Image (cartoon, rainbow, N blue to C red; front, side, top):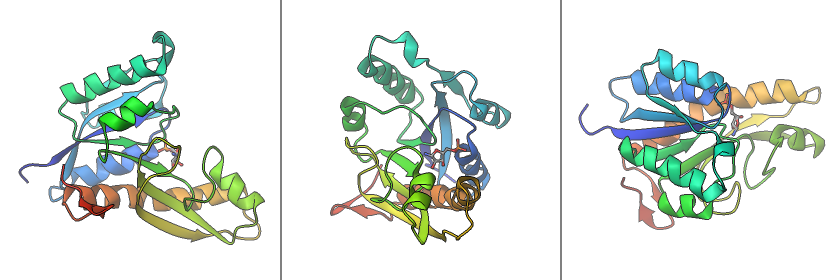
Length: 202
Ligand code: GRF
């Protein structure tokens, strides 16, 4: 398929959402491919998944940079060098700077394990259980400067069961995350998405 959208995926950990994107991108008809995976942790399991799939990886340890802006600028440089058109945060456990968000306006998406705007931030699944929510799920959204905000691309809902633990609810949500993320990328890459009145064409 000609003119596939080039993705950059940012991770910090096990990379199961990255794996879901790798799997989707393997399908000849999928309109995107992964050009680069960046991790801020050398030990992130997702790096091995990327390497096994023959995808270029880079590790930037944020502790090697004087501040967030210079760390983010290094990531932008690497992403541009790899001709990345859409950046996917997939368990990337660093807040990104306003500069990074501005550089990638409408080209930066995230997946969060709750039905935003509910339960922003860390431990979203525990927050849902503690609040007595009857349902939760996941959200893929464009990133804006406020954490876990920004136009929603799509959501998947799951029930929260009376005997759920954080682990059981997280597993049920994660299964939906792995469907939602490739679906959202597909929508963007095929130019079928309108956000805030703009058709997103990358
Ligand atoms: C996922 O639950 C995602 O929603 C959140 O971080 C977790 C990353 O998991 N942002 P994985 O590394 O993709 O397996």
